[in-house]
Image (cartoon, rainbow, N blue to C red; front, side):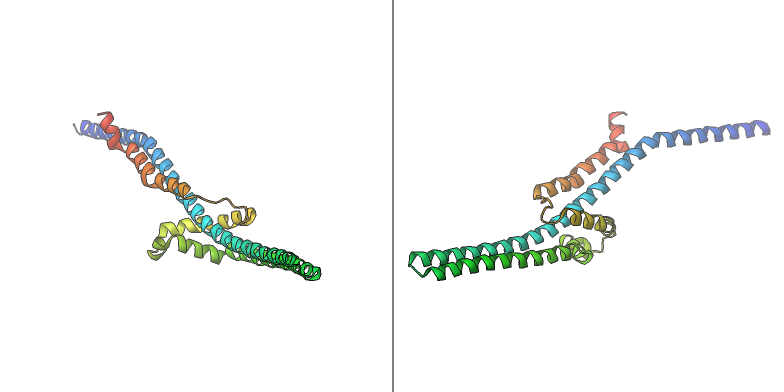
Length: 209
C-alpha cells in the first residue's frame, strides 16, 4: 500500500508537471502577442518624440531663415524704390547708379552675413544642449515629473536624432504636420489599448466560452 501511495503521488506529480508545461505552451502565443504590442508601443513613442523634437528644431531654424530673407527682400525693395524715384524725378544718373550699386553690394553683403549666421545657428540648434532644451520645451510635463520612461526614450533617440538633422540639414528637413503628430498620438491612446483588449484572455473567453 505504501508503494501504491507513492505511485499515486508520483503520478499526480507527473500530471501536474504535464499540466504546467501545457499551460506554459498555451501562454506562449499570448506572450508573443504582448511582446509585439509592447514593441509597437515603444516604437510609436520613439517615433513621436523624434517627430515632435525635430519639428521644434526645424521650426526655430525656419523662423530665423525667414527673418533673414525678409531683411534681404526689404533692403532690395528699398533700393529699387529709391532708384525708381530717382528716375522719376530726373535725379542725376550718377546718383541713381550709386543707389543701384549700393543696393546690390548691400543686399549681397547682407545675404553673405545672414548665411554665415544661419550656419552658426544650425550648428547651435543641433548641439546636444539645444536638442535637450527642445526636448524640455516640447515635453514640459514629463520633465517636471521626472518621468523615467520619457527620459529613457529621449536617451535612446537623442544621438540618432542629432545625426539625422545634421545629415539632412535643417533647411531640407521635412516639416511634421499637426495631423501627423495626432495620428501617432491616436495610435498610443486608442489603437494600442484596443489591441491589448483584443489580446486579453477575457476577450478570447467571451468569444470561445
